[in-house]
Image (cartoon, helix red, strand yellow):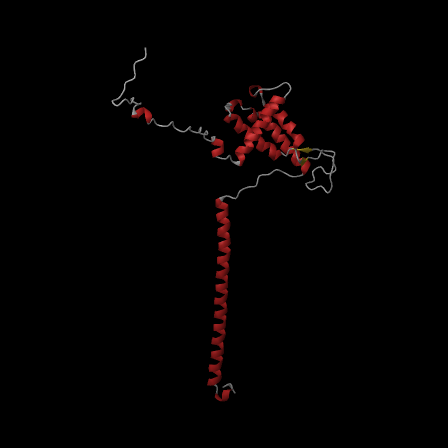
Length: 235
């Protein structure tokens, strides 16, 4: 049975309590917060880091497309050399063959049918970036395939062969040491200072000679004034 409704005096029924009548409205729905941008977007990569990442992704793609496919753990120095030879098809450096008439000429007057290859400098810089990327990806330094001895030998052979074919020796510019630069500067200052001293001595010599001439002329005037009639005293 339902309880009978209570009637207030005067016949009016009691309504709901004021607390239930003035209930707080529900809070507005909050929009979901967007996640913070990743660290890469907050700090843009340098040119070197961007190039290193592209080179690393290119090498990993080469391993996946290799027949049979290779994993990074299976990769060795021979696979790295194979990858460098694969990149020659995208090269832009003319490397003359031994039978070409322009072999050993740095500025050939005409074009030839010799193939385009990757320049030695580009390959050397590429290996440096891949060597760093391998270790940053968790690889061990002692098992780094990009630092293997066959890879270093291959790069040296490419350097020597391209130097002969193109007639452009790869020589590092010798940097002048501070002592040599200081000695050169001292020599220049010494030469400029010596010139000032020589000019000063020349002026002193000219002054002394002019002074000596003045003394001789004064003696001659005194002798001529002593003689009677301006002539010699000897008869």
